[in-house]
Image (cartoon, rainbow, N blue to C red; front, side, top):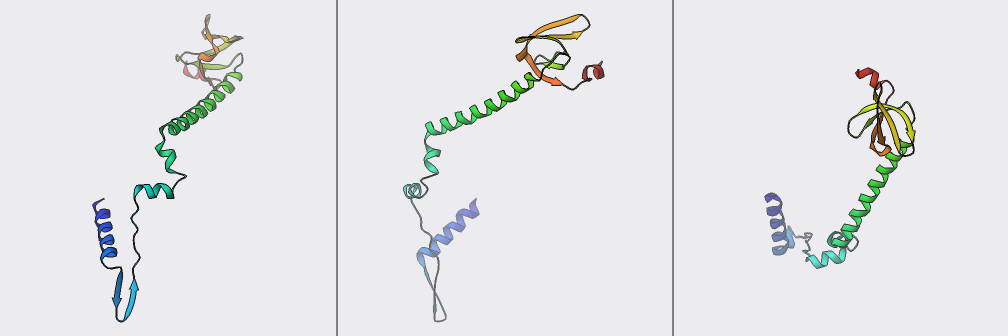
Length: 138
């Protein structure tokens, strides 16, 4: 960082003090650096900076991104729950693993062991497991 500051200082002092260089009868002009105030920069980059400075616009954009992400996630969850059928091996959000024995509206019957059946809401299902998962962990 210091190198950048010092090099910028040297370059600007060279351009201020000697914008013309004489070398053996030829005149060479060096490029000059134009230092612009913050207001002038804003005028040049009108399309970028106002969005970065306006808190309401930033908040609205953040909300739109959040809403889009949650809509995508909800769509994936609804697709997974629509594939739910009797005999599917599932894991509930609580970590309970079992087979779906019955589906009635928004509720399912989940058999976790022989003669042990839990009734859960459909939305409590975290994921559908591959067939044979329950047998492989016994």
